[in-house]
Image (tube, rainbow, N blue to C red; front, top):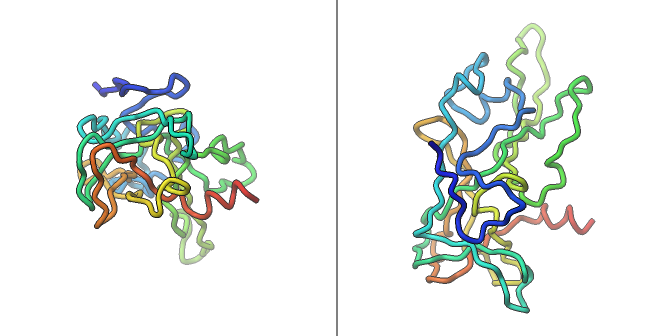
Length: 216
C-alpha cells in the first residue's frame, strides 16, 4: 500500500500523495512519451504502477518561513535536516501528470493547470503522430507534458525560487526515467559543487519563463 502519511507541517488545502497521478484527461496515445515500456495500444492499466516516492524525512523537512526579509514570509519552504553533498538527489517532485499538447478543436478542453504556479515541464519534444505513414506524411507536433503539484503533491512543492534569498540556486530539477517501471520522473538534485549545510533552504531557479508569464 502507498505510504501517504503526510509529513509534518503539511498544508490542509493540498492533498498529499507519494505517487504521481495521471490526469483523467491524459490522451492514451501519449503514454509512449512518459513511459518507455508503452506501446501504441497501451493503457494506464496495462503499464506498471507509477513509482512510489516516499517522503525523505532523513533529508528534508517543511518549515514555515518567518524571516521578515524573506520573499515567501508566512509561507513554507523546504529545509535540510542534515548536510548534503553537491550532486545528490534530494526529493522527487510529485503531482498530476497532464498533457498540454493541443488535441484539436473536437477535443478542446479548458486546461485547469494552465495558470498553476506548481506546474513543471516533464516532457517537451517534437514528434510525428504514430498514425501517420509515408504515403500521407503528417507534420510534427509539439508534445508538451507537465506535472502539476498545485492540488495534489508532495513536499517538493514547497521548494522556493532563489531570487531574493540567495545569489544562486543550490539545487535543480532533473527529468529522469525510472529504470524499473519505465515512467518519466521529475527529481530535485543539489547542484554539483553546492553542498548544503544542515538547516539550509533548498532553492532552485523557476526559470525566466515563469517570471515573465507573471510580470507581463
